[in-house]
Image 1 (cartoon, rainbow, N blue to C red):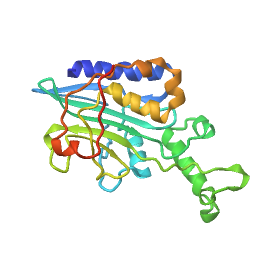
Image 2: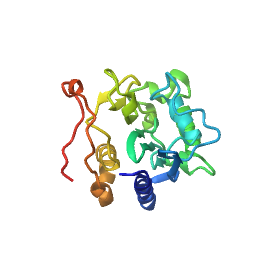
Image 3: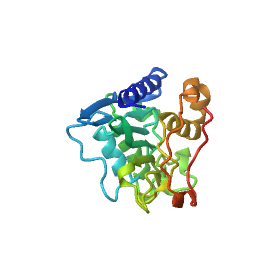
Image 4: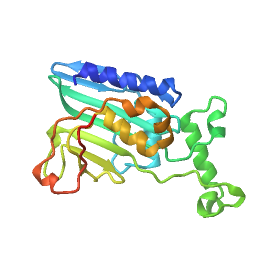
Length: 243
């Protein structure tokens, strides 16, 4: 798939989510070209503090920074972030970042319905509610008084990175990162948008997956293989072309 087709597919997907009210916000994908290089990604933010800060992987500060700096393609209905970006050289895919970053708190309807409230405000309010009162706060009890269950959730980002130029013995060209930034589980090859959609919605949002046919039928073409012989001998992620 070429850069223009990829941008168009990402736009169709985000608009489909928006149409069925599964998004709180989305940023229309842009296509940037420079000589033979084409990049499909979300619009850049003037106040961005950078996509990666060492030591912050999977933390509340990382989520808040990405949310406030608009480093995302979309914010799902529950506050989770989607990041979709691809790079091409002479119309050949050379890099991608497909990331599902779950919201670190269980957002409440009250926090989102407040006048002029942003998702960032709602997250901060949930954290304040959870930790108010120190050890008397509701995050420190297995059975909190008054049925006020903790809102904080220990959930890791799920990110598929592909970078053919970064491939090395300890760095698969395509890999899955989760829980720790050093984690690089080998992946058969570049992940199509359809495969990413299936993994996220089928596993993390099963009711929504069952309700919306477009998620189940989104094209998931087989891509080329980049996994090495050594990586094949380890536990890795692969799939068969059946769609």
